[in-house]
Length: 224
Image 1 (cartoon, rainbow, N blue to C red):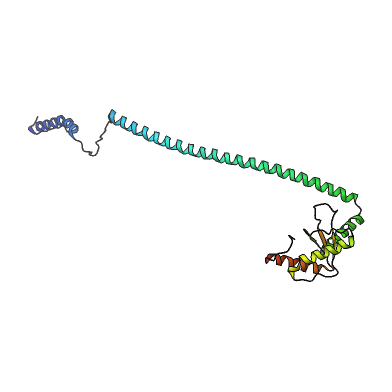
Image 2 (image 1 turned 90 degrees about the vertical axis):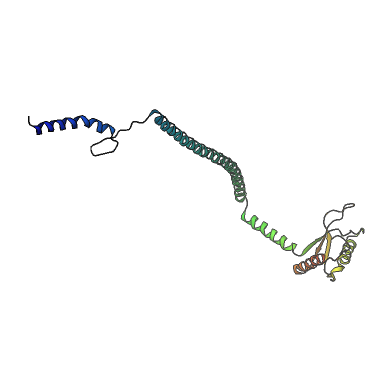
């Protein structure tokens, strides 16, 4: 073997024996080199504890949210139940009113069937006539009654009493005025005096003047 071959063999042997030491001491990531780090038990415990804490926090937050929503639903359901109960009561009242109205309508229809049209017309005309007559009349209270036994004298006394009591109005009582008492005479009970004017305009004017005088503070000799 030549000297060159011997030196080459020594060099190869030297290189082979030194290669394992070089790989074990380096920490750089050169091409073709893989670095593997194995976590310790303490690192695993810390990670697990952190995961557990995050899970508990998330679960607690979700639980609180669900509880709040459930309480809101219960409150809304309670309010809805109260509204439904109130509506049931109102519905019962409406049904009762409808039943009463149906009964009244049925009664009216039956009475109309049993009433002749001519009788209805007569009744309406009578009511219209009575209302028209009321426009001519005034009822006066608290005028002392005449003690005369003569009906003519009592009418004359009542007319005179009425005229004297309304003197603050400054009006002259018409001579064609008619006065008479309503009802049956009773002791210690003054009957109303019905005063009839010739026209409804005269009655309306007298009533308006009397109302204005009372409003202005005029004092009458009796509490009319």
